Length: 152
Image (tube, rainbow, N blue to C red):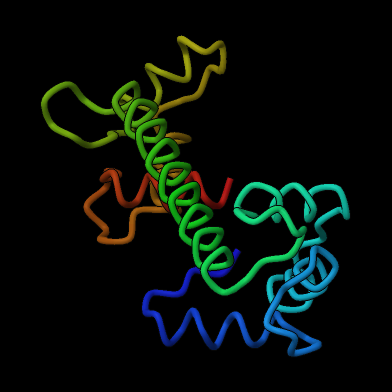
């Protein structure tokens, strides 16, 4: 779902989703706009569930206030998912990083890969690191590791 930061942006977003301009967004309108704007194919059942999750008056439609609650709830979900992903990456990074130095060296990469049953030579590990070593220091920082994992 799109995240709008100001009330004006929410109003514009609401108007864009309200295809028939009746001041309400149906599950069908929500579904259509999510597909067009976000490329997300939402099933009719999922769209109805999204509407029902914030439909305070029970009419099966979203008014502007209900729509704002839906957008804020989805934004909170996205933020929580991002925080969980980052915590997972930090834990994985910690397994590979040299203790206390906050970086992955060819030797620490080799050691962890060996523990996982993948034997590699230090030169192979250097080559793996070089691919994502953006600052050319021969090791991976957390930011470089994150980029590597996003490309995996």
